[in-house]
Image (cartoon, rainbow, N blue to C red; front, top):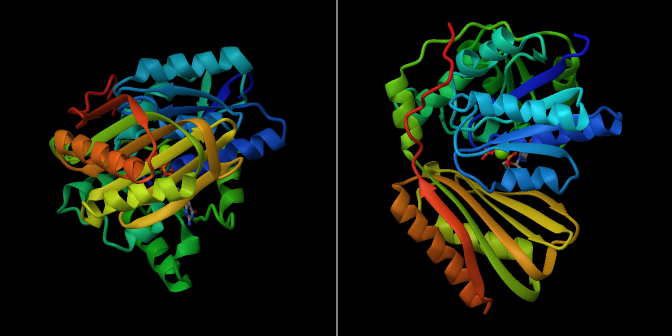
Amino acid sequence: MSGRTRMALIGGFLGAGKTTMINKIAQQFISQKKPVGIITNDQGQLLVDTEFIRVRGIDVEEVPGGCFCCNFPKLIENAERLVGNTAPEYIIAEPVGSCTDLISTVTLPLKKFYGDRFSTAPLIVLIDGPRMMENAFDKDTLGGYLRSHQAEEAEVLVLTKTDLLGEDDIIKMGSKLGEMNPDAEVIRYSAVNDTGFDRIMEIITSDRETHRLPVDIDYDKYADAEAELGWYNGVFIFSSERYDAYEMSMAMLRDLAGKYAANDIAHAKIALTSGSSHTKISLIGNEFSIGGVQGSRFGKGESQLNFNARIVSEPDPLRRSIRETVHKVMKAKNIEYRMKFDDCFSPGRPNPTHRLK
Ligand SMILES: Nc1nc2c(ncn2[C@@H]2O[C@H](COP(=O)(O)OP(=O)(O)OP(=O)(O)O)[C@@H](O)[C@H]2O)c(=O)[nH]1
Ligand SMILES: [Mg+2]
C-alpha cells in the first residue's frame, strides 16, 4: 500500500457513537505521531461534530449539504485536500447517520476509481447498543428498515455503548447482530472503558481492503426513511458574564425531549463554545449524554451555541419548536442572543453519484 492513503469509513445510525470513536482513533494516531485527517459529512452545514473534532486540534474537512454517496466528488476533493495539506497516513470519514448502501455508492467507487491513491478499509458500521435493546431493527418501520440495511451491509459491526448494557444483553445483542449479518465480524465496544478499541485499530491499520458486494435495497423505502426526519442546524450567538454550559444545554434538550416521543428523537446535540471552552451534550431517545468538554464547563463572554437535531417531524414545526426552546431557556436566564443562522429540511431522495454492483 505504499504511497496510498488509507481511508476508513465509520458508518452507523444517528447517535450511534461515530464522532466519539473517530476522535479516539485520531487521538491514538496522533499519540503515535502518525498524521491523520478526518472528513465529516452532513445534509446541512455548520456542524457540531466538525467543531468537536476541530477544537481537538485534528485536521478536519467537511462535506456539507448532502451525503458522501450523493456528493462523491466532494468526498474525493476533501480527501485530496487533506493529503495535500498534511499528507495523512489515514483518513477517517464519517458518513451521514441516515445513509446506507455505502458499499455500492462509496467503498466500491473508491476501490474501483481511486484504488491507486487510496486503500479502502472494510466498512465499519456502529450499532447503538441501548437503542438496539428497544427493537430498533423492526423492518416493518421505516427507521428499522434503514438501520437493518446498515447492519446487513457492514463488513465490521461494532456494538457500541456496551458500558450501558448488562453482560447478558451484550451477549444477546452480539449474537443477534451475527444472525443479521453472518459475514461480518462483530466487535463489542465501549468508548467509556475502551473495550474492543484495539481490535478496531487493528482493522484500520491492517492492509485488509473492502471486498463486500452491495446488499439489495429498496430506494423508495430508503428515501421515505430519510424523509421521515426533520433535520435542523442552527447557530446562536450570545454574551454572558458566566454560565454553566452543561446546565444550559441540558435545559434546552430537556425542553425539547418534552415535546417528542422518545423514539422520534434520533439525535439532538448542542455544542457551546466560548474562548477555549467547548462542550457537547446529546439527547438520543430520552437519554442525555455528555459528548465531551474541552476546557471549562463554565463559559463566559461572547459565545456560540450550535444546535443540530434530527427528529421525526415536518421541518417547519421542528424549526419553530427549536427556536422556541432556545428562546425559552435564554429568556429564563435573562440572556440576550441573536440567531446567526438556521436551516431545517427533510433530506431529499438519495441520488448517488455512483451505484456499483
Ligand atoms: N456511554 C457511552 N456513551 C457513548 C459511547 N459512544 C458515544 N457515546 C455518547 O453518545 C452520544 C452520541 O455520540 P456521537 O459520537 O456524537 O454519535 P454519532 O454517531 O457521531 O451521531 P451523528 O453524528 O448524529 O450521527 C455522545 O453524547 C457520546 O458521548 C459509549 O461507548 N458509551
Ligand atoms: Mg457524528
